[in-house]
Amino acid sequence: MVDNGHTIQVNAADKDSYIMLDGEKYTLLQFHFHHPSEHQTDGKNAEMELHLVHENAKGEKAVVGVLIHPGASNPVIEQLWSHLPDPANTDGETLDTPIDLLALLPQNLHAVHYDGSLTTPPCSEHVNWSVLEEPITLSQAQIDLFAQRFPDNHRPVQDLGKRALNGDG
Image (cartoon, rainbow, N blue to C red; front, side, top):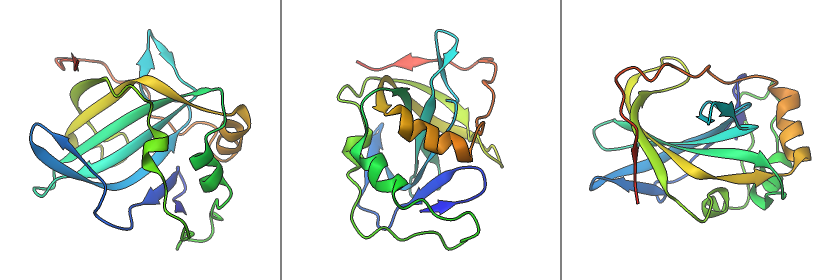
């Protein structure tokens, strides 16, 4: 886990976590957080957003976005925040216990899909985005701890342009 100067990023230690999209396997590379969210619902940002960044064998990216609202504390975030790395420590912190990735996802995995871009440089295009419609919760204290380090680390919402939003059932 590293503080890379613009977010807290947790790099995957193995290739065991993946998603399947259109019959293609995308392996988890890392996940990170934004405050406020980079996606909106009804024109409003959520308090935070989690991005799980995946890549397939051809080097194509797929990102799962999870909106975060204030509410119940999240035990995985508690585990992570208790090991927040010092920004000066470029090597980051090695976590001694595995992370339960499913605890970072809502029960309902219904998502909106679109072809977009990465939200951090180099902002590469043709990223397969899946933004889950159901948010997860973090306690206000968990949100505040992140927001103290990163008061605003989100990319402003981009114009939809010719992109199509597709929901799954």
